[in-house]
Amino acid sequence: MLRAYLLIICDPEYRFQVAHSLEKMENVVNVDVINGPYDLVVEIIFDTMEDLKEKIQNNIQDIDNVMSTLTLILSDDM
Image (cartoon, rainbow, N blue to C red; front, side, top):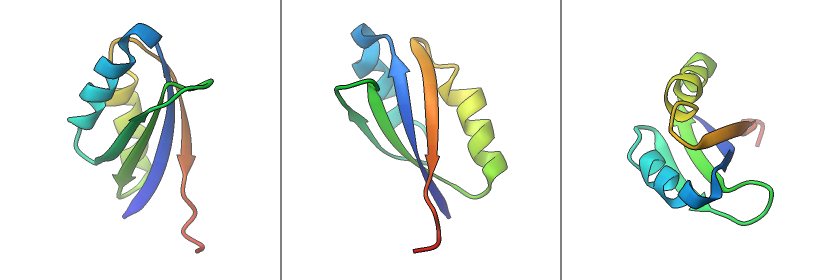
C-alpha cells in the first residue's frame, strides 16, 4: 500500500464542508484543516499511481469549492 499527502486550496468559507466530504471517501486516512497557504492536508492510501491519479482527478478535484491540489507521495525508501 502506498501513501500520499494532498495539500488542498479551497474556498475558505467552505473548507470544513470540503473536509467532511473528503473524510467520507474510501482510502482517505485523515483530513486536517490548517492555516497558511493551503486549507487542508489529506492523507490517502492507494495501490498504484494510476489509482491515485484517478482518485484525485475524478473524485477530489470534482468536489465543489476545491480550487487546487498538490500531491506529495511518500518515499518507500525508509
